Length: 355
Image (cartoon, rainbow, N blue to C red; front, side, top):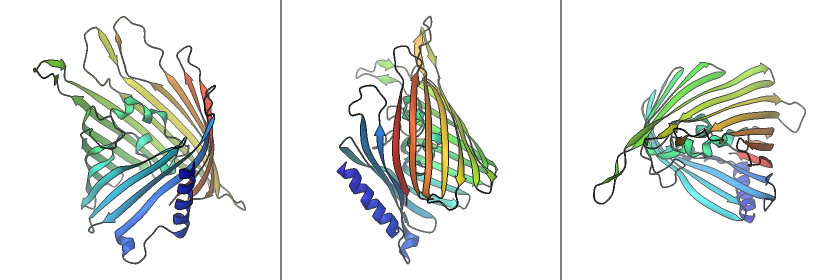
């Protein structure tokens, strides 16, 4: 807990003091990120401890080497239940080839799936969608080492990347090879964006020391699509919507007599941001997110489908003290299809500050 409190004090001091460099340094170096602290109350029966205090900080350092080239390092600090860890997560260099085309190389987020690609500093809930913590997602997306080409042509954006699955600190699974990842976004209007992405993974034959194949080569494909909307309802209210669908192919070789079924996940988020006048809050935003997960499985041809679906419902009231400071009061409900597995509801009270 003392580490979390120290983190909050340090980042708050830096943030309120201002994180920009003055003079010529402001054009060369930059610091940005967010910090958050929260009390988490577990809903699982007899969970010990019943609640905990947690802290998290993400800080990104950028340095512009030339007018067309910059580098960045992203670090995270987190503390929970008296433990803490520090990692360097992003290390990359980005070069603008022409104004519409750039290339990035290093370790960074794979451009696959909005739930993980979006900035954690702008989440409407404490946590990302639950799918980002599953192997069905990390087989295809996450943070990894690779190279990516980005093109932005008016209303259309295109990302094409190659990732090798061997990052020193990576959310992506390092036992599979990410071969090609591609994502296309279309800003159909000022208030709505559509996107579709595909990721192809696989492994060659695995052989023992005698050259005998112990696992056949395999390949699999993940498909993702999402829509984002921020529609102005009135002068002081915006309707916000996020919807995403992921299909994750079975990550492994075909086995005779087994039925390999793809995993599927979808979620939908709806919220209304309401501006306030004559209040200590600048705005409030109630939000709810419904998510259904069905993992990829390999079962015998004559076996019944497993009862392994999960439903996750997130609730949160975002209270914006300023556009950069948010109080979040929320809960996450987990329910399971399998009999004998009890559902539960966790609750939290947190504060997040962007800088």
